[in-house]
Length: 172
Image (cartoon, rainbow, N blue to C red; front, side, top):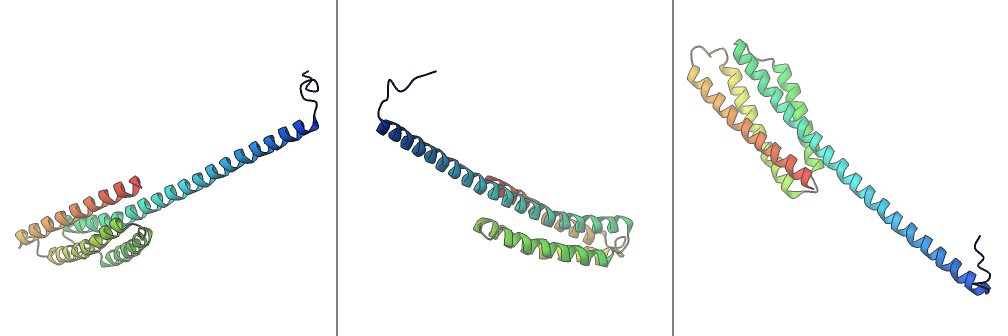
């Protein structure tokens, strides 16, 4: 064993060593506390990003379901089920409001959500127009093709906005 009595004989030296040890311990505790705070902040940001991504996915899955229901009805030459339309519209409105709330801290994302609201109205208009033309599909194929082109344009714009929003939320 080491015998410090020969090296350090004064009690003042022991007190100074004790104070230095306590100060070092407090310094390490302060650094640890700051690291824990940063970790909590990072976890909160990751959680928020995941919520935004989930909101984006929910919204765009509703739009895709609307499109696929209309395409199915068009292929089968049947009028689409208006009840499913209403449920998709209600679900997409809820998702859009949730996404607007989630992106309230980011002006760029807010602008994109505003663009989505405009495109949403275009999507509803195109799908409603297609729905009305299904019984006339064999008689007026050109007008159905025009509406399908419009539908593709709107869906491509929506998908583009979705990609931009996901990239933006992941870069934060």
